Image (tube, rainbow, N blue to C red):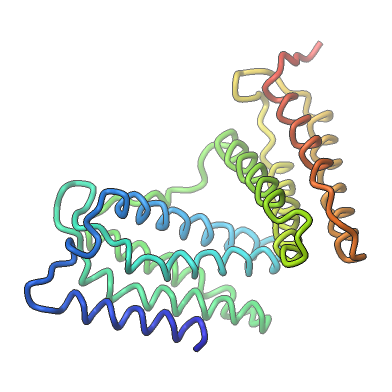
Length: 264
């Protein structure tokens, strides 16, 4: 059974379960940890959608596919994580949510297929339809949504830096394992993608107000970007990945942002 088939079956079984007399949804997903995991997955979906949209604009279709796979995985986990109540204490709008969830999954899947087929019309149309679906669901449930983008340059820069650090940690997990080569390749691609974004969002000062030298900072980021390209080439040649070089480069840039560096 393929991925869509498994999701459809799980969704059907959940509908049967919550439709049984005497059994409320809260009994299946009322634990506080389920609510936190649910919120985390919703943010995970939006992050993946947002970077699918950004990477499409950059024509980084490899990144778009990675992000969509993560969004689909998060969507498939949601039926088991629905909380009994909203954050305002009211009952969770599970009937409406369960109606819309397969539609969201279907549109995300269609966008993935459109990218694979290089269907430009659908690649331009579907992200807007996905966004509107999210807005409609939040509006009907009278829940605020965190879609007011873009945030400030410094906030974007910090987010991309943290995402870059996450890719390195993921590379460490897979480093040296034969079955992890494709995962290493994906994480290196993501690292390169976030480095490209960092070069366009470089703020005038670091997190503690330290003034940054823009030329030096751009040079460091460009050097890191070249490193990810060379590491991807090494993987293509069958060489074992040495993640320590990437760690040192990321750490060096972090120290420059957080350390006592000043322009003369």
